[in-house]
Image 1 (tube, rainbow, N blue to C red):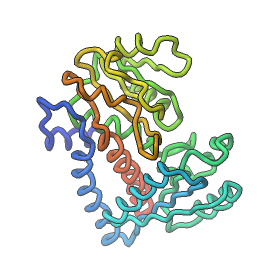
Image 2: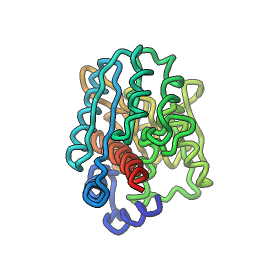
Image 3: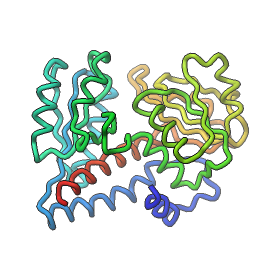
Image 4: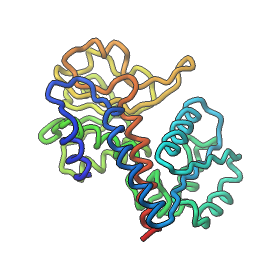
Length: 284
């Protein structure tokens, strides 16, 4: 994480920025990762490979799977997509765990039957769990890592700030809360049980939302000069949307992720960073 801070601070000038452009930062990371993969291939004969297991037909999932395939192809990491019924996941995971040519395994969520999520992600080899979902995983989850990189890359100082997380899901909210607390930062969490969400958001200097519920954050809910990171992903009328209402982007005083190209590009970077780490461990 410290290495990424140094990299971002040296490459990005952010004094007057308003948008937290993850796509801009992702370009620097992608170039570095391509160099690392070439080194693994040429010096060690290791061909990094990611396996993605998909159990449902979902336009949002399909979009992100395609993005991962394209990103992998760009940096010479093989990406195999396995579309199977959920009843076959256990046997497939066992096969992939035992395959020495596979360095990373993703069980794409949500599953057809979400009640089995914890049971099935726990079957993934911790050394190949590049999504960071297994309780014994050796990796940080990709989206929380991406959010931390994004804030560090744009010199957003979190010390002494009131940070509010909206949503405490297993993929983003819960692991990000632990990361922030581990850095001795002041963190509050809002979820469905929060009686007055507007009061919580209006008191926050930094709002990070990851609920997957379209347009839950409106302009009058945000204090002046706040930082807003939208990590929510949902499908609405066939389009991919976030948690922030479109009207929020009329606020000129905010530092905010764009409607597209904020956290998403860095999430893919963080995921493949874990794949490279797994492949490097194999080389060593």
